[in-house]
Amino acid sequence: MEYKELGEAIKKKSDLLCLVLENTKESFRLLKATAKSIIDELKTEYSEYFSFTDKSEFEFEIRFGTDLLIFSMNKNVYEFSRLHEVMKLPYIKEDKERSFSGVISIYNFLTDSFDYNRDYDIGYMIGRMFINKDKHYFIEGKREVGLLYSSFNTSVVDEASVKSIIMSSMEYVNNFNLLTPPFDQVKEVTVGEIKQKSIEKRFITAKRLGFEFQQDKE
Image (cartoon, rainbow, N blue to C red; front, side, top):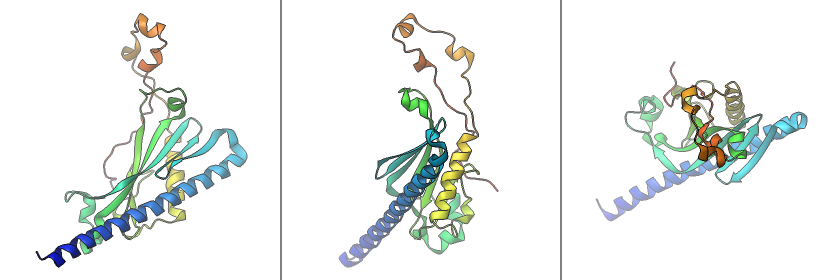
């Protein structure tokens, strides 16, 4: 490979990754602005039940009722494995560069887990949003939150789409309740735990959302 050919190849790859990353940043900024708008609207009538917090350029959270959603943008660009279902789409086969994507993850926790510093409580990723160079996207997650891979060629990030993502995520986690841990898991406690008031650390709290990290099925 000649110097010029190598230089062009590296420039082309770098420009692609920069474009995908910038599209992901723009999408995340739109998600953040839309989430704040949704929460502000809900707060006009239900102020004590909703809040929005801008954590950083790459993270924000919304609280509603007893739930908390964290939206987090990864600062890297990824390509799908050759075995991934998305690689079988005609949309990707027509232009392999479309498979390079930025990632925004959505996590669900209980607000009490953070308010009372229950570090052993469990949260769940409910979806991952992938954005490519065309600013097309799909979401890997449960059907209530995600979009099928087959929509990758038509789904474009805009205000309507991100509003739907946020509201469906809120509705999804609101429909699941806490499950008490098995009796055998919490029936024994040491004197030290009682004295140190650390008994709650053994009472790990989580919702069973039924989320499986796999592709949606038709």
